Image (cartoon, rainbow, N blue to C red):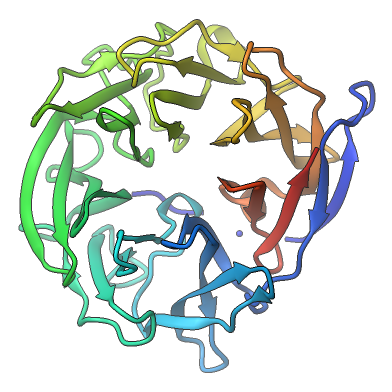
Length: 385
């Protein structure tokens, strides 16, 4: 539901004036030259799983993934090849693992370069090698936009896929929907969750101790595009709830979404806003499964571009990353937020063009926090305190 990829330089140095409490340890990964749209998930054994889109010598594209363990990276494996993947940073494919190790993947396809249509596909694998025939994750087959998806395991044998449907284009109300996918990669159920959301901003979903929580950029008839949350608890969806009244009024789509992570009842939601003509990245926390959130903390220090990511660590703290203006282009910045809300020093991880850096992604599992971002190829690093 959008369109936009430059050299980058891994710096792993602290931004002047902030000291350095966190370091970025670059880790080479199996993604090849020209790879893009990185995303993280976790295997049933707790190992980081990196997925990406990669261009082959014949000009075709494939969705690939690799798993990092104590012995290093596995070889890159292919989920789907020779497909018309929509190669925009905001439309990153995703993968998750169910409790039995079944892998589910989703991605968006664009029928042709000059078409505005987008179609969301899913596939499943029980061994990580053989994948089921991809199927569309939505009932509607018209030439409109279906995408900006996020997915989470919502049961032992099922996943919830959240996505947007623009039946009348982005200028008309866009609906946020949920598709339930089973372990065989088949569509079980489709339902509408919000009839009017921001039409070009990715969705984000997590599973909490109480159920599911979605964070997304909402939309009002007055073109207020603030972040809202909606929860699935005790077998039903709650009403949509504004996370913080930024009151960002903008008569265009910012292509800049919220990021969310959860550990038990603790939830972190990070997002970008341009309200009050102060472009900034901020984060807010909940300790009750998303029923309530505290006041946001501004994490950016200059002119933020947004494209945030967040990951809660095992010590109660949280990492947040974002893009910010600097170095003649853009910089990937990271900082940690302590459990009491105190923001740590800012670390510059990379710099390059805003388009090439894309949507950086964070993931934490066990004792490790990882970050991935774009450039001449997908880059990865471990964050170390």
